[in-house]
Length: 126
Figure 1 (cartoon, rainbow, N blue to C red):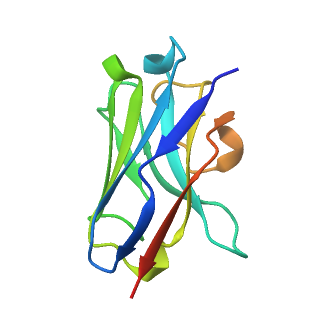
Figure 2: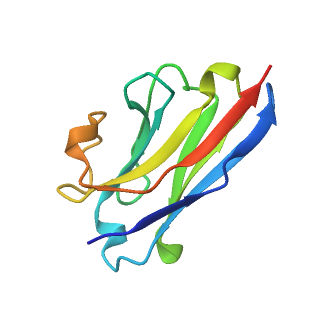
Figure 3: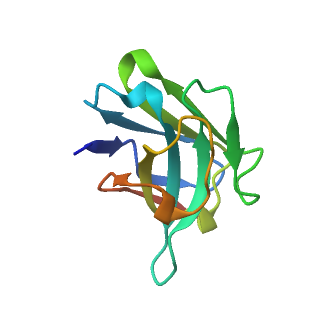
């Protein structure tokens, strides 16, 4: 079972930045696509960003495009989400996820991901 551990969440003001990290001890981390999702209270889990095994391909939700950047360091078994110009509507629990069925296809559907972290809270005050 792949274990994913997120960190880096917190309470910030609108316009601030945060960087989330997601690490795993899985030896095969570099072979599969990774994604970030978020879930606000009373809402469904939604796609934020995804990245292919090499980092060469990325995808973003329209709501974060231009503000968030996903990246990965396979030598450190870590995927990152750099979040700039944060808005109150970005407030949510953020989850990283692994899609071990593919190394290059970037899905925005939560059901396509088969390993999840426990989540980290991001709160943006206005």
